[in-house]
Length: 382
Image 1 (cartoon, rainbow, N blue to C red):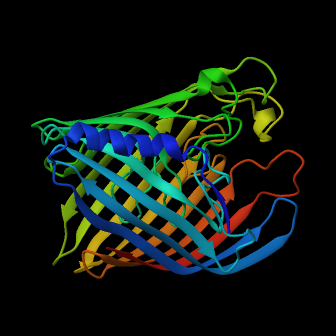
Image 2 (cartoon, rainbow, N blue to C red; image 1 turned 180 degrees about the horizontal axis):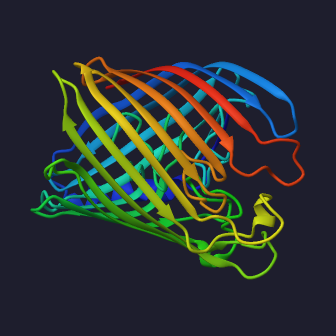
């Protein structure tokens, strides 16, 4: 087991700061929280070089945390997170990572502290969070996915380093603003190449969103958000040409209707657009022109087919220039069928069958990549 505490002190300072601001007479309360997710995962890949490969593995992700309540207004959270697999090809490794070491977050065998933050809530409308935390902007449905922000989906481990401000209005609209730190080693969330954070101007990135999930007629979700990554897009390749800002604009909409018995039908959709994209020659999907900055998903959800049992179908597409999503890789079509059994408020069993295929065949490859994967997983919260 290797260990690195680099960068840990700045987060411990936040904990001490929160305690000091709460006042010496505050009665500090501690609570245990977290979750464990385990399952069987299988992947069959027809790769771009013409080879075929199948991987079967058992995975587990553990995330025990401690909540600290200094007062009614001040609280903090610290959480350990690790992901492990029978297909683990890395030595067990704990580190306060400054950026994710793999394309989808921590590698198998890695562990870290994925939450270390203090939070201030002056009332039930405002929230200020500072440190390392989880952030999401998901489309409602059985298989919740996002085109731009979704920390730690499935068994992945990613996080947000920065500051988040939330405000909820009386009409139900929630405004979220995030200023996020990106180390030169890389981002702490999934950011696809040729996004790169080696330039000093890319240290801070920004997210702003507006969402309402209060039911209005058939509508159960209305949302719009924007992501801005200054000086992060190397459109002609890292180290070649001018570095540009990368923008992502996303809108979400979901409606729900009653059906027979307990069943409800939800139709939901999400669309994204990036005005600045890399050259196709850089992402190897062509020899000329700019990559496609459009992305979208539509989901068909049958909720409580019988009580606590739901199913959903996801159809998604991300252009080769859409570089933000942990759920939809660039230059790929996706079809997914999901089943969910909500055993109770703390236990869930889910099964998924998914197909992903390249839209454009990569330059120099023998064929398009096609993945067919399956999982059966169990999640328990505590």
